[in-house]
Length: 477
Image (cartoon, rainbow, N blue to C red; front, side, top):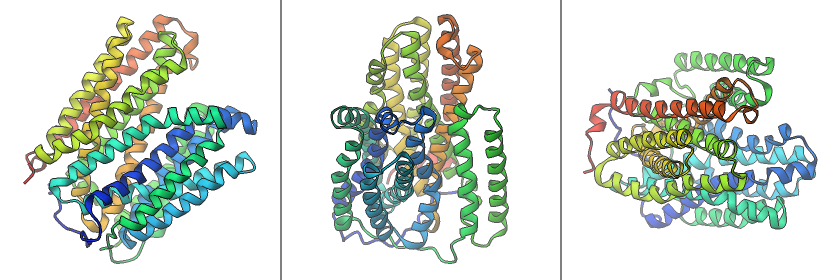
């Protein structure tokens, strides 16, 4: 049974005031999140401007998310070898340059290149933020810092779509990126002034071949999951992508077990605290992505509401995440992570049940309550689980461990969306759910929401039976 590590990294806590350090990493988080959510709503304008089909246009969103998700373990590994400050400053400066290039792109192909590069350089941001919080802030203040991170992430998720929509309507899609540049500049200036340098404690060689196998296999897996609805789940392209991904990831696993200094030591998953928090966070993301996928469809198809109304209702989810995040962080510092995560699991369960009540009763009020429950449940899991994952890792692999942790989260969200989509099509008997009767739609959404409740229950099961008891009983000093 793995215990939480007490190993520390070398960091100068006298260099900056903790509040300035926290503000610096939070604005970096805000930049990465709002860049995605604000830009996504401008997709119709981008498609119209370059006259590309919808299937190709969705790469405007996928290019950023795919590179960001796939490269976070590599970004984390680079942190393990080279420390945080210089890498973060370099990546933030490069992110600024490509953010300028996106609205200047002459054609859609170059837009995709620059969006992909935004994901590449953004992949260093999240591991740096989490390593900095886990290392710089002592145990009694770490929960509050992680809670602030979760709150800012939720706020950016909430503000991104309406801000992006208003700017796009008024000035066009390119203005969304121009508007983000001052925020990136502020983030860069704050980082130069206040971001502490957390030195590397890793020795040995960087396993680039192992990193290439892992990154390539993961990229093909996420590509298949994200493009499954477009390609078809039984298409040759999807099957080939999954087969090649399996081969590359298998080769990576073989190399990891046989190498003295692997890119990612798979023995990390023998650490039950890290394994449990990764599983809980992954299941939470499946519930979150599932809720975000199903809610607009339910409102438009079952209740015959407008897309704008659906977006306004869905706003309840990130809004409550942003409100609850800091409060959950304070509870962690006071009572420990385990109890807060457990309450979050129960809140996800209650939210899922209320969504089922909404569908079966054809009433909207249970949906509003359900989204509040789900939002608070996500907040109660997100920050405490990330804090526990960071604490469970030795400092020599904390970067790659947290990068992998976040990749697990994003991958789980995509897997969950694919499963919910397949189940919806399976129960309705067609990919065109809008063409079937209301009764069939109700049954299909009910089946999906029952699955969502099962996932929420399994989150509690993992927390109870996988998390080491020593961690569950741990209380703040």
